[in-house]
Image (cartoon, rainbow, N blue to C red; front, top):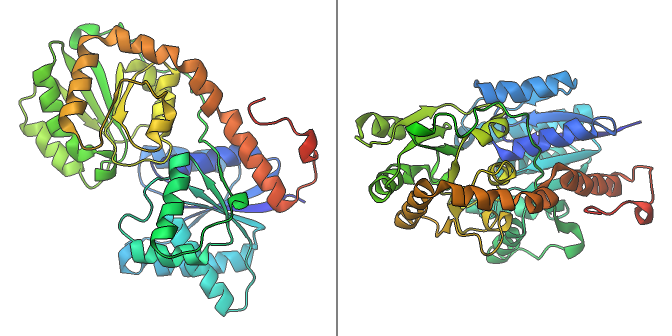
Length: 394
């Protein structure tokens, strides 16, 4: 009988954590029986609906947590619903992705203990290098509840961030034997974009794609783009794909600005990896990341990435990569964007030269190999002995 695995995610919506969970489900569906618990439900947008369709095609149930605001009873409501689901479905392993799912599970586990229930095996995937930025006290309590879980970080920066958070909050160190790094895996989607040379007369195609939140540096975009336009000699056109708390601010700015570069704002786009070849540069002014899938996907198709010199993103590119600026440094980011606008061929050649290394380190097979081994060891799934397994990367 296949082991029952429950993925707990924040919601079905735009996000690398959700994509990792779905990719594991697609690839391991023949080995384990998967279900999903989406704490905040299923978003009403094309990206979320595409994710839901992928899971529906596999026959994977998606259980919805709550529609309440997380700070106004939503976490407790979702925790009680998750506790009921755990009692009803009795998964062999629960796989938690990011802080909201971890908090929800900690509440569910507490409710189960009070009710005399048993606890399944738990895997945590740490998707960020800065943990619990707005929930430090809650995070400290949750970390105390999850000390027995297997820890998988998507980057060395993410693992360091977890260790540092625990040390700062007086929590005991986690055993090294139960902490490891498995890089997020990317796969090439079928191209569906125009060749870069078509429409080149309207300017270099610049893309920002992600949540419109301060973490992603979306608040920096107006000043960054205005300054880059002043510095560059060439022309550009900017596409901003995303949603979030800064959406209205960016909409007002784009409607009021007299920027000579046209700016288009649009919702998140399903299957974006297949369209990245149609852009000339991807802009990632993030303040913190775990392991950004978008950066690796862009470089895989030869699209250069302008980013920030932060843990996680720094691990995607070589030490000599010239397109990283300090986080929050609008002037430095603007100068890099102006350089790419004025000399695109140079930087596209640089990106193409990185493809082989990116594919070797962040190709989907590497991620699958790491998680397959973890699932097998925890669940004691019969199969090849570890000594006979082909090593990841071999």
